[in-house]
Length: 389
Ligand code: FUB
Image (cartoon, rainbow, N blue to C red):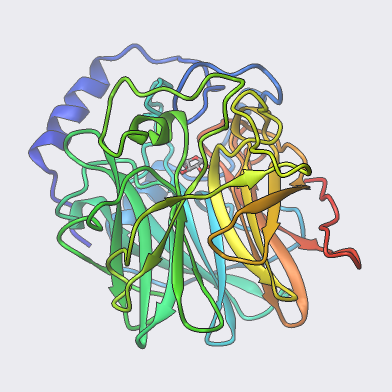
């Protein structure tokens, strides 16, 4: 993978070295500083548990496979890199995990989420739930994406047309999040990016669901650092704000994908999340309103949309009989983890269901996270049993 710096990246590096280090570690990807609901600890002293400068250098190497230790439930799956936002899929009989790759930078936490300054993606796979995890190495770097400037946030992957598609958000040179696509003949990459972001795309956290009839849908969006509230008019408004507390909350966005999987097919719609009385969840209802981290899965013919509540740190879910909604709020999947962000995927593998998620237990820092997995159980009525991380 290329290690050439774009001119704006050189300017960014010069700017970064001029800032005063030592900012709070407890800031969310963007927006105002959050309440101290589940603060992380300070970084442990002594030898870092994870990524060292030598490991960081390895990100510019060509993808190479590394075998990691056997996995265990609710334990960090990867200790050689900081990882987050795990999107897990079953491809070719294995579990493939497409996470964000957090870097060991000391960037200042700010309202744009610059502390989440990821540059590349690795892909991981598991033969089964008791095998060793395989790191397939770096599969895409921001320097190889012509339109992307920085902040390679939560990705997802899909398979169609004999091709694997990697979807990822990144900021363009105007500091606006867009969603890009890269393709590969293999689920383990490397992935070749499209020259431009998906036409009409914005905000963060793409999650692609391919239904039984072959129709693919993308769910996306994220508040604050994810910029969703800046798009309420259909155009980017840097002063855009969330609705008043007594108004319906902003919903995630959903769109059908065209057969080429590179374009939206039809309009981008706002997904409705309703309460038990059929009324929209309100913007002030921070325990239930959508914040970021969309995921869609299907169980027994019902569509489950799950998401992070952001500043209240839950993974919540809502169900529908239509992938375009409306969805009805049903409860929580995961209690708050250690660390500010929470982001996940839900996947069936070899007859069991699993929740992949992340926390900050490996580093004690909000922006240096580690992915984990836990078994997920449904009740007879289709509700999900709440998991403690
Ligand atoms: O990893 C960067 C951002 O943090 C993701 O896009 C969000 O979902 C949150 O996990």
